[in-house]
Image (cartoon, rainbow, N blue to C red; front, side):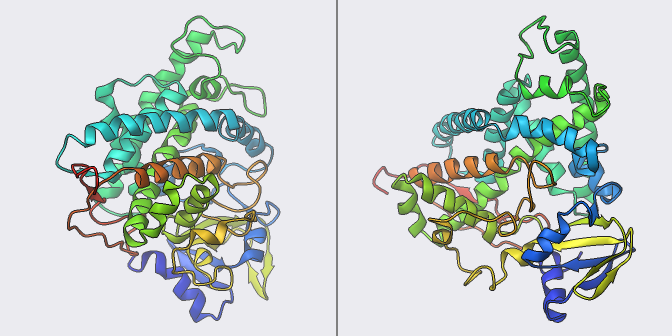
Length: 410
């Protein structure tokens, strides 16, 4: 709670890289690090997810009954739904285009204001686009409130006090809202995928797909669980606002990336997106429960105890990333990225494991919006751009204030 992102890497360094045995929320835990540890952690024979996530995280970030809490056949059946929606290249392309169009419209409006805060504005761009893409009816006046609630769920999951309470209230409010939409979508479709009684929830939309999804026993999800999973589609998309703000921070600190992005090379834009996700802090670590008594590098891990994977330390390990505290998109050019190498959204296989199925969307959106940022002219007024490693999740303190009211030759 006091060291934030630095806590586990510091403990790993003091142990000489050996597994660290500690306690989290009163529970015994073993922390592991490295590429082999990624493979170990994401093997379902070693680590399970059911009952692993603490209540405060479920009640803010993921929701009760979410795919993140499942194992075995239940997990595979639910994960297949997310894979069909989020790993579909046509769907990724359509969402990316919608976000780009919303960004362009917003940027024209930003130019009429003295200054805007990028973090807040990008969260609203992403909210409008993902709701349009997902088939969620959303009036213009509702965008800001929904965006603020989705941001609050992410911002408060690891906090105590007002931020955490705000996150809980936001989740409860949005689950009730989406449960009503799920029931309406089912009535609209007659709970039959082959029936279409209306067009408000069109066939193929993610909202309708979740509403009509059947679990591994062939039953429709209860309306609450369906609402939770819709949130687990739109919330992570809006969380890309953190990475967009980090991209602006990178362009301010390392302006050479701006010219490279302006050249329009898709490979460089993707490399830039990967480096933003590697360099900047987002997930400190992930956890699960030991499926049995395990042994890792000579340390016994008791059955049912917590297993933690050091994500932030992994992303800054000099054995994996030469000069890890230098922002270098070029490190990702001309090569593929292994599943145990870059893990800001988990490791392993997205189809069968717990790696985030929305990673392709994150990369595509970040590449597109980083390029958009590089293409527009703006000034950065004096502000606090520091990034506290004690705050989880963190971001530039000012939210990155920018002014588009600049001369065309600026």
